[in-house]
Image (cartoon, rainbow, N blue to C red; front, side):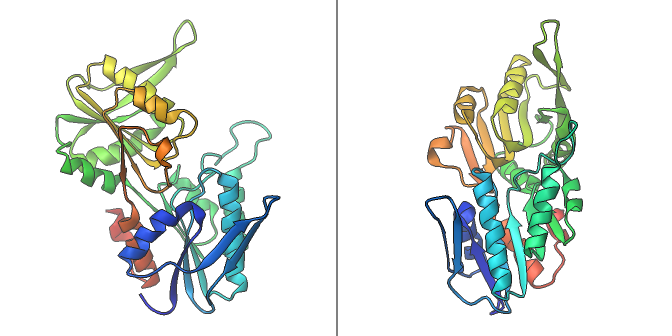
Length: 313
């Protein structure tokens, strides 16, 4: 890179940012972020950023409000320190699921967060697998949303999980396009798990497609409570699937999700390192694939004013 480039990371994404820095052959910028006893966040940038193009990495996973507020304070600090541009990399965008009014008198919090980031001084935003791509329209600045599908496809091909003996599964109706995308990379067919309530008002899952004696891969964007994958794996197991795999971009693994994944018949669960997963929250069948190369290449292309469209192929 050059002297006008600086890469920083806040607390939520330091492990990922270090990998990105290694691929860009640079070091992370120096800053101090701490909390006072009452929870207030204080940030001090410990090097000059005047006239520089700044790239700041911060996921907004749990505790989402702390990480989000830390990010906004850092953006303000960079703006007041006369940074030339402030480019924010948010591998996991918290509040993305609150992108519409699902009931009366509800806020659209994803839009509120977008407004806060722009108002604070963000010049450009880079994300990974937004919950819905339409969220890009919430931002009045350039926003690039990368996809993790090629990362998973490369991994599964290396494991010989592709072709006619593999079926890519959408564990819910809303994820059909995501499943179709991965199936295209793997030259495989797709199936869908549809859920409906029976006479006792309990949910039952039905498979639209053929999975018997097949190796199946469930795909989703967020692994949060694990209920979707657990329920889907039970349905697939009863339908005679030979082996069950699952992948999700963001491994949040909240509450008792690790225990649920350990109890499931899923042979392996793949997630990216978009969020840092504590060791105690990692189920035994978890495989973490780094997204650092993808993000580093995007940062490099943005900084050198090159097209990033090759990263979407």
